[in-house]
Length: 71
Image (cartoon, rainbow, N blue to C red; front, side):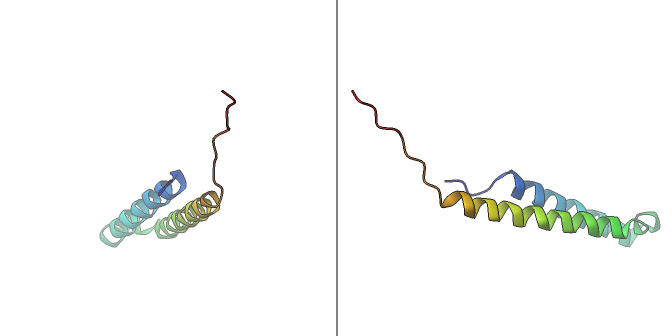
């Protein structure tokens, strides 16, 4: 059973990156010009986390069985 997938990891990484960029924007005026791009990165990261959780929930409902071999 999977607990985390690639979409969730990507979303967490993008949220972390956007948070760093927003903090850098509060310190530096050049980074502050890119505030809306940072918010866009944050929203995309949240969307990836939601997609990953939705994918895990959908995948969890399907059980995989091994074929029975005639020996």
